[in-house]
Amino acid sequence: MSDQSSSSLQDPADQNKLLIRKMFRDVLEKDSFDEAVIVRYFSPSYIQHADGKTLDFAGFVDHVRELKRIVTNLRFTFEHMLAEGDKVMDIHRVEGKKRSGGKIAVRLFSLWIIKDGKIVLCDELSHVVAGSPEDRDLGSRTSKR
Image: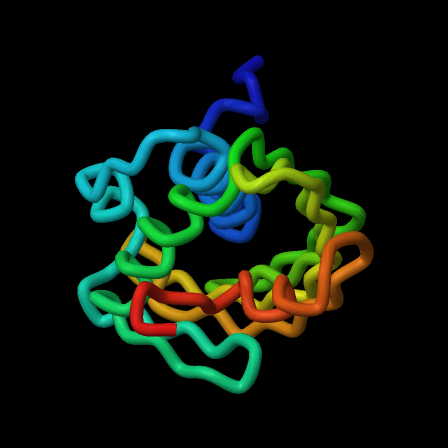
């Protein structure tokens, strides 16, 4: 009998959920910035809608770089994750330490779309649970703020 949990037999929706979890681990939880890792997970046509802003791929790369400059020790906890076809919907919480002092905690509702093994879209809403008022844009902040 074959092992149904092997990735070659996995449902595409399950593979997409795994891709999102790995992306959080490899791109966002690491304190270092590495654009090559971002390229592994995100399409050059990537678009992100967050905090009333829209970022293209270059804007997203700048956002990740800025996030690494501002916070450290990011940890993500998934409350819910559902997938259907090329779409993954999740509710997750992120907690971290601001390099300037203090903590941040944000709860996010995110819709991801994956094409050809790469993330092409994220549409999310965020709510700062702990932190200061200026932290409200951390989900989309770039160096151009």
